[in-house]
Image 1 (spheres, rainbow over the protein chains, first blue to last red):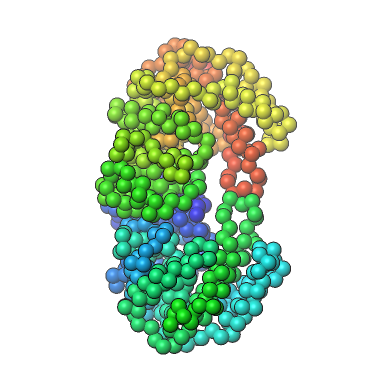
Image 2: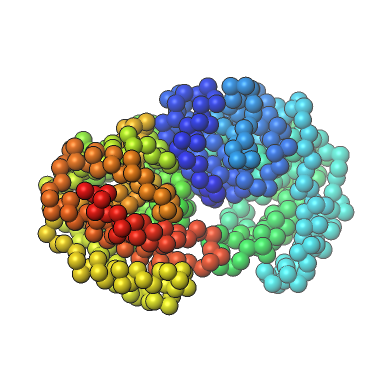
Length: 318
Length: 318
């Protein structure tokens, strides 16, 4: 949540002139994106999001990420299209950093979603899965369970215990998840990070799905499980909201019914989703000084969800 | 440069409903303001800046700051008007914090201003000074030279030397400035902090003067001196741009000619401006851990400007 790079007005105006979008009218750095800088840019022709890729994102992945937005937007998914520059380019370089201009979409992220909103999100996710099956580029899932387990193993049991005495048991639980992981479920390109922050809504309508920078090839049911873990609990993972969970599943299945193997796998897939967020949060926690201005996210929030899925997954996904 | 508070979509929608501005369409936290959180809010009727006052700003000062915006906007100064709520209120409270809705103005802050831009800024500042003379509320200048000298004295010579070996001499120089300070120059309400960041422009036109949270009663020539120190040098204060300086002065004097006493005082007033930024930056530097994510601003940038004014002030302001 930051703007890491200062872009002067003159530099911005020169950049905007490389696109057929009119003259620069306004630009505000916005507090979104953890590894990118973003500006809300207004021109005489419209509004756009300008993203500068600061770190974590490999420029070699940009044709995948930005091409995916175009692919989905063309198929009427509520996804911002990439604005191409005058020579057709998906991104440009400023001082060696890649920048892309992306369509601005209206809507706000729900903070306390209603079942009707969760249903709409489920349906929108299924539409993305169906539309993305024809997307021609590939990207490996760096955060598949065996990889996130490896992150957790690198943190090590004693460092994990320094965060919470109950955290090291995620190692053993993670090994069980990886050992049982199914590799043959129907796949597509998946969002992999569809938290409410990454969905824009107006009332009960999904107006935007954003931040596809974890998108990769993967199991569609796993993406649904990630979304389930992201939407159906309070922040700390202490309270499951059954109405939200049912609405999300119903919305998804209305558009894309799940196969038997997918449905049977969901309790495990949801545990894999929890493993992933436990691992990334534990790693960030250990990398971030306690007195840093950045708020560290507690990995235990997803240990609690994980325990919930172990105990209730079969019932919830029946 | 941050958003300190999370405001959920539902909470934002409830807040916006208290104003006659239509329905919430979009809200993005923006990376502006060091002591406030700000959102760029779009409704079905327009765009607005929502500001939440986090710290430093005394709620008792809000009628002055927000009323001043209205006063100046009514008099055609390029200043955002305050949007009043349905009961006429200038601000509202959310969880005990004051929030205000302010007009959005187009424009971008120049990074490398041209003389034509500096001339326009000088003229706009003079127009604000003239329009603000009738503003009925008062606010004392907390950062008058005797107060900023006191800040520097509290830092102490050895702490100042820990920042830069050459910094402690600002104490003696500051005492000289305070001793010679004129208290009888023509006054109005002054902006006091008109750095390029606080000016929005489209081409050579000033479309917005923003961030009036240092505004107070004070000498108009002093405000011009602050603006001179803020606009006419490179960031480090190593290079004075004479063309920018002349254009700024010309633009100001075209609208409001300076009296003899004001003109004679300018070299000293400019030193007072430098004292102020040296003091506030030194205090912030000593308060900010070296490894904090916030970039510390070097007080020496304004020691160099100060030295320039001591040596060249009489010539520059002749």
